[in-house]
Length: 335
Image 1 (cartoon, rainbow, N blue to C red):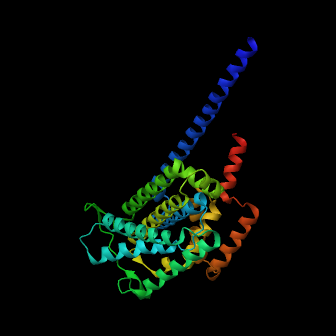
Image 2: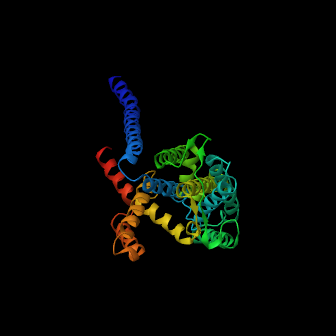
């Protein structure tokens, strides 16, 4: 009788111990996010706001890409098309209709990127591996030539003089400080959407598809529908990043539509840590900072080469990326 009661008490204490450990882990994670939020709020008083805004725009772009690659296991070589579509649509609307407020222009650019993502997804989502990557690359190159030939994009000259306007018709975004806090709010919104999606049942299904797609199919999940939804959500957030970037720098150019940009976001994601929430933020900050520093040095013409060498070193040294390796060390010490 005593043995039975002791075994039952140990059985009940085990789940409670697991729940307590999970509660503490969640508390530490929330405190860490709060600390990052505070850092983001005080950052423009320490560093140049425009430089920080560039990091935040590319970080959102990388986070959107990571949702597709890190959690759905789909490698897209055409995400630059969504960044550029959001930027061009927002830039054209704000430049052509001065009475249009910036938030409406950004929403319009995001909506157009979402529609394009749905079209790309329907055409490519049934392919896997290198075939999926090549289809997305081909579609993105098609959009690149559309942007080159279209009159509303300004062709090779791009769109210049896009007004920042007044947020909600009241807050003047010509101030870099006001613009920074708007961009920071946009990034926090996008990051929160991704964080919620990843930790929802939808995100768990995406992980199951990434790990073993045939098993997910055997369990009754409509795999194509889940992958299409992930693709569209990723495209929408990439368009949001492109629209915001256009308002910040008051221009939209072909650089955002080039396949180099698709390769750059892959570099950011893998360098920071694919499949981690904070990895793309770390990777974007590192890549943008290196580009800024090297461009002002005698090695300015060797930026791509230096970034490639750093990428190779990181892949050979820690394949999980910077944040991925830090996460492993954290789990080892706090398991």
